[in-house]
Image 1 (tube, rainbow, N blue to C red):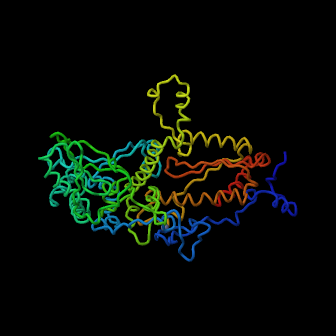
Image 2 (image 1 turned 90 degrees about the vertical axis):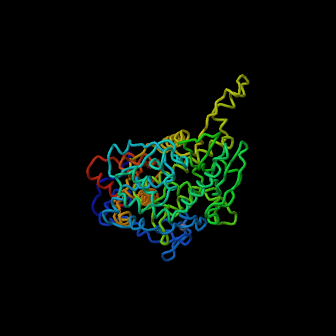
Image 3 (image 1 turned 30 degrees about the horizontal axis):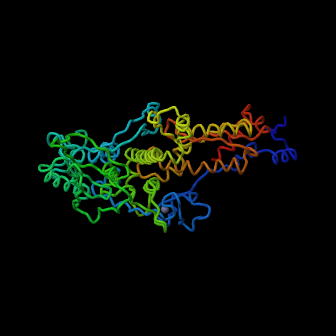
Length: 537
Ligand SMILES: [Zn+2]
C-alpha cells in the first residue's frame, strides 16, 4: 500500500515530496495567522442591522461599509417597527454598570415576572446545567405556554397577580408585587411600576376591559370579554356568543389589519362569567400567534407594548406574501445602529426570550404538520391505508397518529434519513480517516470585541452561534477546496451543543484508501503536523 511520506527529505527530494503531500503534512508554522472575521460594522441597507462582511451573499458584496443582507430583513423585504427608546429608570438600569444595575441584571427574569401580565409555563431541563460548565444554560423540554388568569383577584388586592396588579390605583399598584417579592428593592418596584403606568398602553387596555366588564357582569350571564387578534375588546354574550365590539382606549394605534378566516382560537380571554359563576382562577392560554404574546410577558423588554408576530404581517414585496414567524424573530435578534439594544442587555431573560422564540416557531411547525397530514401523505406511513384496504377493520377504531415528515429536524424519520445517508456515504467512499472536532471558543476576538459593556460570552448566545456559524464554512473550505488533508471524497458531520453551552462540530471526512492508512497519529511529529491544518481556524 502506497504511503504518503511523513518525514520530509532534504534537497530536491524534499521539495518533490512537498509538492505531492497534503498541506497538513507540511509545517505551516511560519505562516500561521489567526482567523478573523473583522468587526461587526457592515450596515444593512434594508434595516440598518450590523453584520460581518462574510455574512453578505456572493452576489451582494459590501460597497464600503454597507451591503444588503438576507438573514436580518430578507434584503429589505421585512419591515417591522423598531423598538422605542427605553423609558427611565429602566434605561439607566439596563445600560448602567453600578451595583444596583448589576444586581438588576442578575435577577432580570425575576424582575420581569413580577411585572408581566401573563405567566409562563414550561418544564426546565437541568440535565446539562448539573454537569457544570461556564454557561448557565436555559433548556426546556416539552411545550412552552403563556397563560393568563381572570382580571379580578380571588380574595383581595394582596393576592393580585400578573395583570391584576395594574387594575389598581397607580400609587397602590406596587404594593402587591413588593409583597410577592420581598427580596427585591421595594423603591425600585415602585419606580418601575410608575414608569409602566405612563409608558405601557396595554395597562390602559386592561383598565378599559375591567370597567366595561364590571358594567355588564351584573346583568348578563354567559358572557366573556376577549381581546381578538385585531386587538379589539369584544364582549361575547349569551348562548349564541354574539359579538359586540368595544372601543379601546387608544383604538387608532392598536387596531391591526383583518386576518383571513376566523381568529376565534387566537383570542385572548380577559374575563368571563357563565351562569352566574365567577370562574375564579381558571387560566387561559395565550396563542403565540397573537400580536400581544410577547409584550404581555416580556414587559421589561417591550415596555412600550411593541407588537410581536401575527398573521397580519406581510413582506414588503409586490406579491405581499405573509411574513414568516422565523423571519420576524430573526429581525428582532439583530442589533441595529438606530434601535435600542434592549433585548441584548437582558442576560438570562434574553436566554429565555430566545428559547421562547424557538419554541413557538417549532410549535407552529408541528401544528402545521398535525393539520396537514394529507399534504405529506401520512396515511401511507402509519398503516392506515393498509388497514382500510384489507376491508376487515372499523375505520373509527384506527387511531390518529401524527406522522412527522423527514424534513422535520430532530424527528424520528429525519434521524433515520441522516443515519442511512451517513452509512451510504461511508460504504461508498470508505471508512472515515479522521475524527475532527471543531469547538466554539468564547474568547474569540470576534465575540469579545462585540460584547456590550460588562458582558461575557455567556450572556450572548446569539453572538457565539453567529461567529461559530461563520467560521465553520472556512474550516470546510480548508478541507474541501484547499485540500489540506489531500483530495477529499466524502464527508459526514453534525453540530451539537455540549454541556458547556458551546456549539461543537464533529466531522468524519473520508479521503479514500490511500490517505486512510497514512493519516495515523502514531508519532508526536505526525500529530503536530496534522494539527497545523486545523489550528489555522
Ligand atoms: Zn437587513
